[in-house]
Length: 144
Image (cartoon, rainbow, N blue to C red; front, side):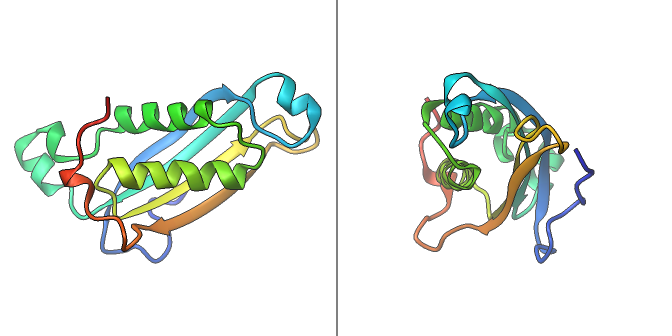
C-alpha cells in the first residue's frame, strides 16, 4: 500500500483525523468466486473536522471524532451490505459517516489486495464534502 498524503487536495481549512490500514475481511466483488468467501479489504480514511482545538485544549474525546467508533461503523456498514462494487461500498460508508459524525469532509480509499494476483491491490478513492441537506451531526443521537 502506498503512503497517503497528510491531507486530501483542496481541503486546507480543515483539521484531519487519520485512519490508516483498517483491515478486515468482507464479501465484495462481482465474480462468483468473490461472492463465495470473504477476502481482505483495506480502508484508509482522512476525516476532515472544523477544528481539533477544543478536544486538544480539554483532552476530551467527546469534543472530537472517536476513531474507534468510526472504524466500528465502517466495519458494520461493510459487513451489513452485500456490495459488489467498491464504488458502492465507499459511497455508502461515506454517507453513514456523515450522518453519524460531525465531519466536514471525508477522503476514503478502499483496496482489495488480492483481487488481481498481478497487482499489489485494486481500489477506489473518493473525496466528499458534507452534503448541504445533512445538518451537523453534533445534534444526532450517539450510535447504539
